[in-house]
Image (tube, helix red, strand yellow):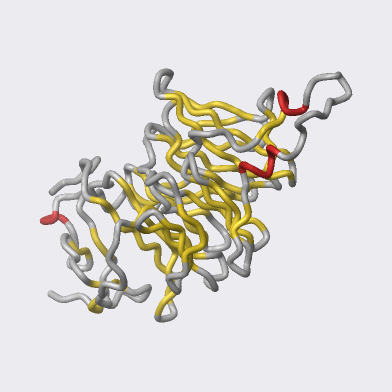
Length: 300
């Protein structure tokens, strides 16, 4: 018996009952859309170091890294010296790259100049009063400290602040097109658990936590999956869907769909990186995992 094409990896069924077109192990190989097997490309070390973040712009024209306490561009030029070694988070607005690790934050312009983000808000509002007579610096303020993940969606920048004592996360929303100002009185929503991902879809902000996946449509938040999302920068888009890694494999939205759980179950990792890769005329989602966790439903 032989087969002329392969369907891919299958490890949630008894391998003795699978056809020859399924693989129970697929190390270092690619499976094409026509079912052909080929050896995957290799890799090489580009630069060693204590990296705390890496970001490529949406048009792939620029890349920024956080390494050894500094924010640098792809050519090694230092753009800013940082005070915290916490993981860096990023989002992009009109070719400007916002960054934040809870302590250090800023905005990188196309020419590499770094503008203050949190400090900019401090120069607005102080000493001014609103129509109700309240000080603006009471109602409005800068990006809150101890926030982590940030994301741009529908003209606002969102930032997640985890409250471990309550096991809840505040998701702050900036003023519309006023990315330096946050309304401390009403500009937020809350979700149970720790937010590990914010991903923008035209229809909703996808909110992944350590226990669930939610979608926020601007007014209400809805649970769409009762399993969590590992921390890390691992969402990508194919211009139609948001693709992201979860504790039960690769998922897409909207609508929310688990793309892999019927065929494959792997350890989800304790941290993940991921992106959509266009190569050889094909489109793939690449997940890179820091080893850890348990497969949800693996037969083997």
